[in-house]
Image (cartoon, rainbow over all chains, first blue to last red; front, side, top):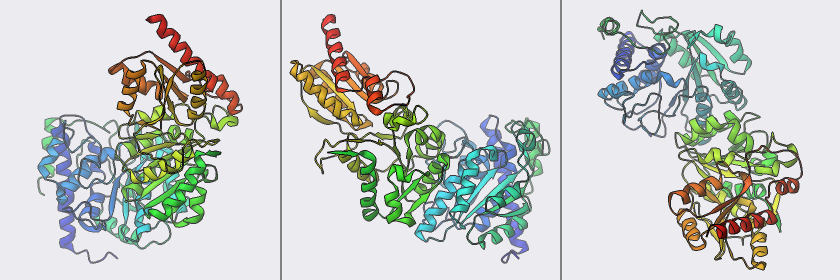
Length: 279
Length: 314
């Protein structure tokens, strides 16, 4: 059971998730360039649960030593992270409209030196889990009791370094590390299973020594419950495989191939924003 | 007296372990070779074995640095810089994290293992990364000081060490400051700039040259980035001729760094002693050094050739 999540809190989280989608779509569209709508929209509920309910963090004090940390290993979903950080209050929401502009604090991929709340610079795939493991080991050494969360893309699992990190995290018995897999089934060239067979993923992570939980990644209650369970696991890291839909919220993109990075027509943009107008 | 720079690393880590509680050490199944095993035995809770997985080694080191630790992550030079280059670039240099990348078995010191294990491009690779400091000690004393200085220094740093025993050339406690060249000998006719442990043969070359009436100024360059521009430019102006010496490719290392500097300011005739765009091969270190002119004789010959060329031009 989830610790006292009541209907009002759930509807607040739904409102946040909807707001994140609006921010993502507006920020990419305003950048005037092709952007990663699909992979940003698929992880919205995960970020909403982490940033607006589950993680200990202080947007007004990004360097607070006791904070939990979040690493976006799939750095191309930067718009989702920026939306969550702005919505949480790390920086003004208006800044989102400068995404990818020259001189902006919001680079095309996350940059820890420029953006408050960004814990790790990512973008070259397959590296976030290693960094998160290092952060988890540092927190454990300091006895800080803080946790580290990392979000991986499924296409990213083609990178061998992910599996190096997976082995090492289990070997070092870190239990303050929880990974999410944004299992949206698509990568640049098409279905993940066509580019490189990944399944059976849950079995693989279990064989590597991880506790594996599987959830519907768009079901806020299910994600929260998985986070609660992951927090109670001892002596090993936890992986939450979140089944998601790439492009969730824009029907023209949902589950489609060939739109890993794309633009929206003005019509598609207006339609998408109209659908999300209620929040 | 002889001592390897990796042995100095192992000893200095023990001192650091006592002095600095934030220091942690990682290795990739080579801790007995890099000598980080000494730290592992004394401070097991602050040592992390990462297995034969260099990409993860440097990624985890980056995360530890982001968490406030001062990680020293060591393995052979070829695997550190070449196998994990993108991790070093993306997760350490680009986010400017306080990781100390320590390599042993650099240059020809992985002699018998052959070309697969000898890196002659590591300094070039590290030097071209923004935010990276690159230190190559000349002996075990400098190496020990460099380890302590690296821990005090805030930011990404590459420390290049060797496997083999080399002469101790400095008194214990000799001043060592990152970025500051060390004058060894003053002279009028030519400046010899030496990267790392080639200092021994270079000193012998300067002696030989003195016997022939050639006055060589000799400077030990232990930090190739940031380069001690003032010291190098001042010496080049005094002597009007510069020879660089390095156990590294002529592409990307000291030859390149000094040529870039002098060409932009006060060009003088230059000569280069180093490896001319080839991979290594098996053999004894003596064989390999001889084959590439990395000997007192090779350095002297390069100086004489340069001075002849210079006289011909005048």
